[in-house]
Amino acid sequence: MFNSKQINKLAISFIYAIAIIVALILLFLVSNILINGIPEISWKFIASPSKTFEAGGGISVQLFNTIYLLILSMIISIPIALGAAIYLNEYAPKNDFISVLKTAIEVLSSLPSIVVGLFGFMFFVLKFNFGFSILSGSIALTFFNLPLLTRSIENSLAAIPNLQREAGAALGISRFETVIHVILPAALPSIITGIVLASGRVLGEAAALIFTAGQSSPNLDWLNLNPFSPHSPINPMRPAETLAVHIWKINSEATIPDATKISAGSSAVLLILVFIFNFLARYLGNKIYKKMTAGK
Image 1 (tube, rainbow, N blue to C red):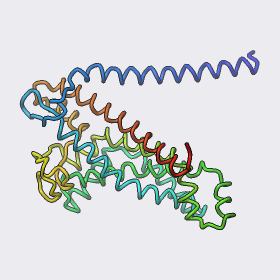
Image 2: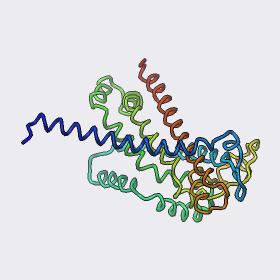
Image 3: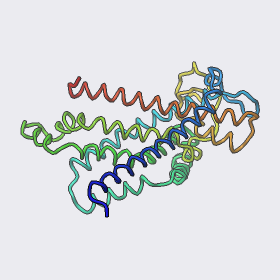
Image 4: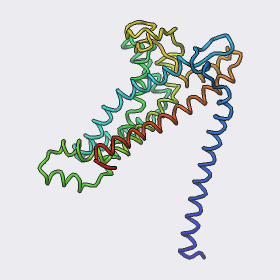
């Protein structure tokens, strides 16, 4: 029989082995995408528009659509999720209704993206007559991301010790001021982690956007900043094909001669975009955290 020290060593070795296996799988997937895709990336590939039936298409429009849709969906999602999380953790009474509400949020966070897409298609595209547009896609992604983001922020707030809340009350400041000036700054790193995870889902989402944002984009006039013009890049009511949808489309339709190369390059660009967003979000989050907490 094993003694307690041997069991402890075996458990630690098993945990290390699982961690190494996960890291190797992730390294294999990332390296495979980058090795196949980076040789296909060039300035022409990034800056030129795609071509439906010709070789040598680019991804400029799809790349812009992806970033624009991410920003718009986060502008909608973050304030709602933050307000809901603050209420659930700081103000909501502990009763059966709140328990059912939290359970419903957890259930919604596991909804398949295709279901969210069909819901968005029925309501925002058809019922509200938004059509296939960036706005329809952003709202659909808000429903897709809101439960995960709310629970993530709520857990971040719950991790802050009650001693800090009691210290705010002892100083005579209101509960709201305590939340804004004490709890939120302390929970900011965890909140940013939740936002980064939610944003990663937006960048890689395709199924929900096929039914809401559409599978095509109009010819864009990059100098046209009129948000009501159908050819303006900032018009939220125009259809928009994102990078993830573009990768799915060119592989499923096979109308482009060099579809494999474009798919590999697009996948690498999307992965690099996720890395850049992660690093940038964490860098800015640390800056804001240090400023709000007067840390160095």
